[in-house]
Length: 205
Length: 205
Image 1: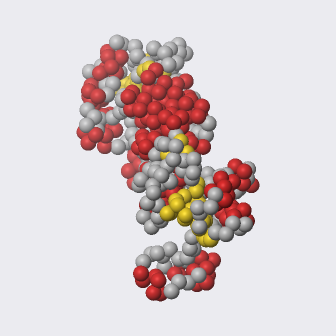
Image 2 (image 1 turned 120 degrees about the vertical axis):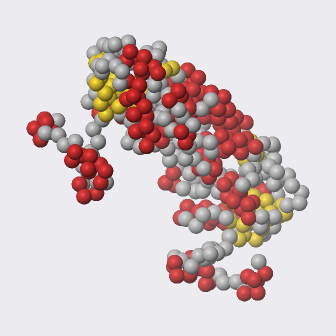
Image 3 (image 1 turned 135 degrees about the vertical axis):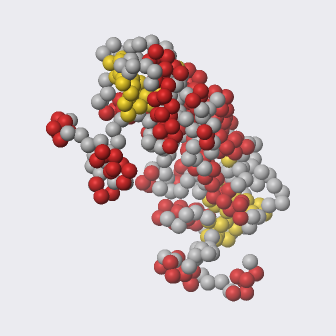
């Protein structure tokens, strides 16, 4: 594809580096920029640059935040003895949205994935062990994806934390609420039968 | 959705203004920015700002360009008596890619669409009439979409240009090459029979 303008070609090249954006979509986005006011493009660009330049990570849990410590870790009303280990900030947002969790988090920043060249030292695992070693933590909940990489990371963390006398749990796996039993995959269905809960407990929720 | 950082929320808000990008995709794009080098985000932002700020439009055909006149209008080897009228620069790029057109273009910058509040005065129609009035042009080819809006715009331009003794044509409509006849819609198929071309002409292409 030949572009009538080097500026346009440059913008399309940059936009096409975004995940899920091909060259056709990139051209559509560039033309969208051209139709809008110049101030729109400037505030758009500023927001991205400021995000990348000024973003901070909580020194306790490594969640994204604007201060030295995130609002969850700084909240005295949260249970600081209960730590939920997640892959990324997206999971923190998803769990916070449920309103069901009153503990704090630990964001690994990824999961162990030899295929992508991500080893344990690229993740915030040592800082988790340090938090546990400091004493205050009573339970660590592992909330990673049930993939090969997630299971590997779970097991690695489990091994690292086993010397400490804390409870280590994983989030419940089972048939999703609203899903039909006949369409559930057999691994999920099998595990949901093994890990069945008392009917009395389930109606209390 | 509550965001852990105001900077992140701001970036997500800006990214979600892009066409076809919802808040979930915007968050994914923002996290992509955070994983990359700060210089990446800076060159990304600079490309967009420079495009919007420094882009020029050809003073003859209103195509996007980096100079006062686009490379097509400035090319003495093109046929300046043959003008193809298109909606946008995307169509210029598509037609240029075919390598079949040796004339020049006129970019309207849109089509007449009362639903979107776009009238003839928002488009480069007067400048087209001016180009025709100046004399050099012998034929105008209308290459707009076959929609209600495209047909309206075609008819409006046709009326404006009819006082001048030039040829006004529209691009051929018919069954696409590679398409099966039985799946062609009836309007297209009907028109392709009415506007049939000599077999001798067709095998020369």
